[in-house]
Length: 234
Image (cartoon, rainbow, N blue to C red; front, side, top):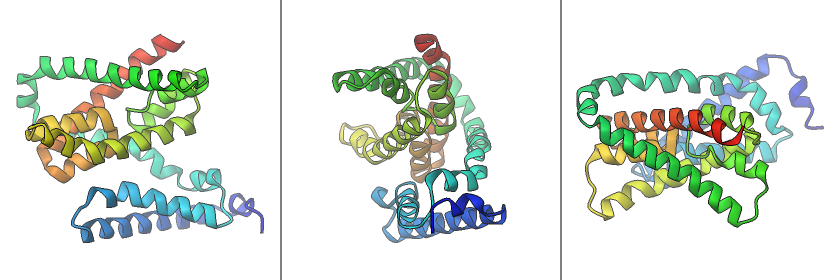
């Protein structure tokens, strides 16, 4: 049976694909809880691995699966907007530190882009790859749009975003604590700035304050990158 059968099914198979994806996520969440919330078993790590294995083993193409679960990708936008709720509750505190937050976003966001481009250049990457990696530290919906706008490859950008998010979510909290930083506002903002959505999910595992600041870091970094990258590459 060829892989093309997946695309030939009627919309009912979209429901099945979405249902299976949600089941995999729920099982991954249960595994995460069983592991006592070990970051290595975070659903955003084990879930995609299980889905990738399923695509590799079954007569299913990646694009076919992607088309069937497109609604889940679309929901990333509303989910990101919903992060404004915990953020609003921290607004008085955020206003107090507005200057430091904006300066940190400018320096951190610029450094993320510069490091990605420098690393790619050192390894001899061609311009298309460099353009794809430039948006690695912003949330997936923005990264896909920006990458294609500046001449990159959306799928490569998405892969870079996932790797960056997972790496940041795993390493940032213990690294910050190892140098004496225990303020959850700082930890959360760092996770949002460097590890976007995956980092923000990890921040909410710490506490609501960390999650709110991670949401702020992710949003500001996405805005900064969306404004600056097109000016640099177009």
